[in-house]
Image 1 (cartoon, helix red, strand yellow):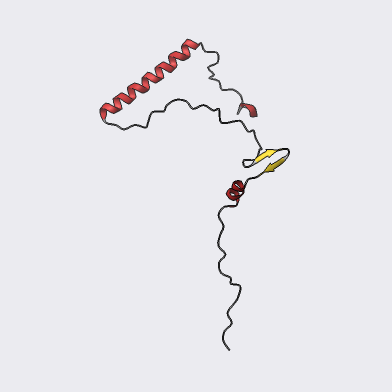
Image 2 (cartoon, helix red, strand yellow):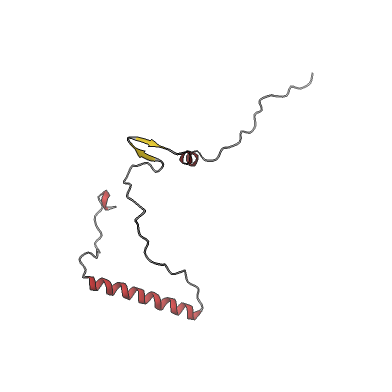
Length: 106
């Protein structure tokens, strides 16, 4: 969002001392452990614990106004067959009209 011109949030931890940040993080994990322990003792089933923060290595910032399908290279948008099928959707059967109409017997 900041790449689009949004201002940085007021509560940034950039200027906070590292020891304070570690303390806040340790306190949060301790609270979570106590919450889970009490819930287990009371027989309450909680959501599964997260294994950690996922890395955003695979994601990249595409920007605004770029196409959401295909690959844009050299000024042309290249669409794969899969992209085309996703855009068009499933085929619909033609109903109602027949090629050879029956003529009433005279």
